[in-house]
Length: 302
Image (tube, rainbow, N blue to C red; front, side, top):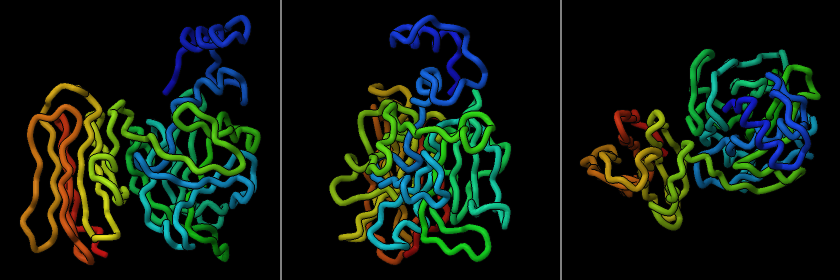
C-alpha cells in the first residue's frame, strides 16, 4: 500500500497543503501525508457486513483504538470472520499469554511504517512471515486475553504508524473516510481490493449475511452467506479482474448427504448465487476465479 514520494507530493500540492517535499519512510503521525497514505485501509470484516465500532469503551482505553461488535447479545459475534484491512506481511501471529491483554493477536505490516493490529481473536488463520491480500481471512472474533481477564467477544482493532507507543496509534480510515469517533456503524467495502459493483448480499438476496470468505489470490473472492430465517446457505464468487468481460468463474455448495450444486461458466462479474438449505448440517463450499480456486472442508455444521 506504499505510495512513493512523487505521488504523495502531488496529492499534497493538490490539497493546497503547501510545498511538497520527498516522502519520508515513516511519515509524522497525523500529518497530511499520513492521512493520504491511510486511505487504502478497509474495514477488517467481509464485504457488505455492518459493524459498530466503539473507541470510548475500548478494551485497552487508548485514543483511536476501536472495539467492534455487531450482534445483539454478548456472544453473538464469537467466531465471525476477520479479514486483513490492507495487503501486507504478517509480523505477529501468536497468543500473547500474560504479556498484555491482546490474547490471540495478528499484526500485519503494510510498508511505510504502517501496521494494523487484530486482537482477542478466537482463532488465527495466518502465520508470521506470510503475505496476505486485502480482504483475506486472518482469523475469527473471540475473547482471548491474559489470564484472569474476562471479556466478551469483540475485535480490538488498531492502526499504528511508527514505533513510539502509544503516540503511534492513528485514527482509523476505512474506504477513504476517517472513522466517526467515538462511535459509528460502518459497512465494509473490503471486497478483495476490487471495484466490482456487486456485493455478496446483492447477489444472494434479502436476508443473507456473509459468514465466511476466501481470497482467490488477486483474481476475486468467494463468499459463504447464511439466511437464518430459512436456514439457506448461499455461495457467490465475485471477480476482481477482467470486470465486465466474460471469463471463467465458478461457485459451488454441497450440503452433507446431498448432491453438490455448481454455477460454472464465463461471467462478467460473478458466479452464483448457489443456494441450498442446511440447518444443523455441514457444508462444503468454494469457487474459482482466474487460476485460483478454494475448496473448504466440511464446516459450518450448526
